[in-house]
Image: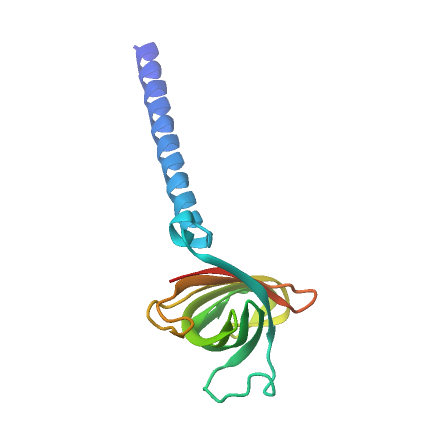
Length: 185
């Protein structure tokens, strides 16, 4: 009787382990798919028929991007996108470890391939800083990146009818903000 009970108990334990392992593998696959679809800006479904672009952004001073549009700050864009990206911060939070998250809207005014236009984006910024105080970052940035989907229907001029995305990966050594992305009409 003891041998049968032990065998039954071991069998149940093995079945539970197999079931849990299968569920864990399925969850990892789902998380991996979600991660790839959210963070891969060059997903084939998004960029088929799109034009690739790139350049560098810099924090702008008033003499460069001085238009009073009520933004929290502006980036001077150089490269394929040439102009000013005005940033309107809507939410931000910072954990005690220095992990900072921010989201909001942006308004680009400038040129693409020599033609003038404007568009809006919704953005998400994620970074690691030396620390946090009162929900805001303090100290130097350790790394940072952000994603900026172009709001469908917001474009004017050369950007009329455009969709796409801009992605920045901060260069914390030089202070430059290299970007790349795609645009589709």
